[in-house]
Length: 183
Image 1 (cartoon, rainbow, N blue to C red):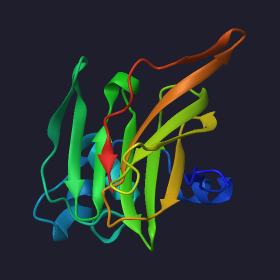
Image 2: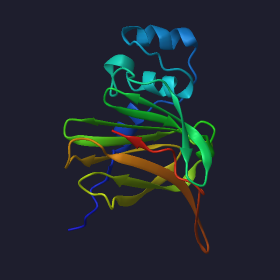
Image 3: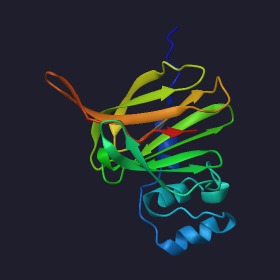
Image 4: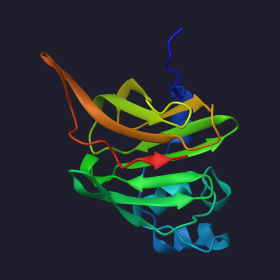
């Protein structure tokens, strides 16, 4: 049996669960976040609202948005931590690329959303304390996707993704992985 345990969410479930990414007016985010001490904003805030806001998959924010720097890349984007996971904006992978991770019901989930263009495939990388070497799996392309894995540890699943196009002489992928998120 293969070691790969990352599974795609079915197309029907993904379509129902993943809405198109739009920037919401500040009052919309404030209204949904009224039960939280910290209020998300921008693309991270819009995605948080789409994932259910304070009562959704991630719960209330526990930190404000923070800059993320990656070795060799410099400034890579922004990330915010929530009660049950993280959301990050990763502009080096597209100006509207937002990724999210959370855990629920014995599974760790990863969601990438709204690339600027469609890709032929996405490569998803997942690591955890139970599997520090990680697992890398290719997913059907498009503009977005969602993956999950059964949890074998108490949280701490770290996820990244990058888009690739298949050509006559092999694949050509984005130069950098997205900002990582943990759920």
